[in-house]
Amino acid sequence: MARARKRVDVERLNSPGPAKRTWVPQVRLDSELFGAFAEKFARFMGTARFIGWMTVIVIAWVLWNTVGVARWRFDPYSFTFLTLVLSLQASYAAPLILLAQYRQEARDRISQDEDRKQAAQSRADMDFLAREIASLRMRVGDLATRDFIRSELREFLEDLEERQDENQYRDEAEETL
Image 1 (cartoon, one colour):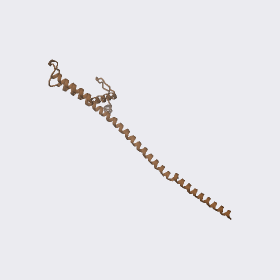
Image 2 (cartoon, one colour):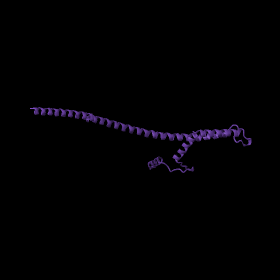
Image 3 (spheres, helix red, strand yellow):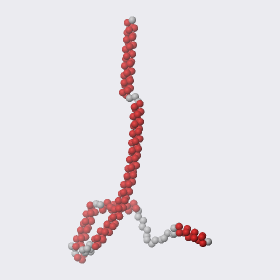
Image 4 (cartoon, helix red, strand yellow):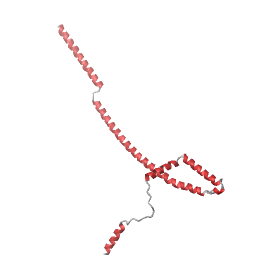
């Protein structure tokens, strides 16, 4: 009886338990939609317009907090808030740029695979055509060419003319007799 109970416990440990309910709401993002957003964002961050706007914002921030009216300054001389904002922007930008690079790498890999397949098919087609051309050349070598037929016909005509001349000569010789 103790053995049966032990076996049941082992079987229970080998199987997964009931799913635990979590109180965190499950957010589902469409990976393609998010990937497209990441690519657009990465493309924008790589432009001169982004760098220009970022430079204007940082200069305005620094001027506002150094030269501006003292009571309207929200980030005094240490620029702690500016550093925080730039760090936050960088912490979001880096993963988005990496995601865009991974997607581009995957597209490039697929494109290269397709190019390799296309090149292999083209190579196979060229090899086949080369073999066909070689076999046609070999067959043409066995066929009578136009020049060969003409030369044969000339020789035949010459033979006919010689025979005709011989027949004419013989006929003339018979008439003289």
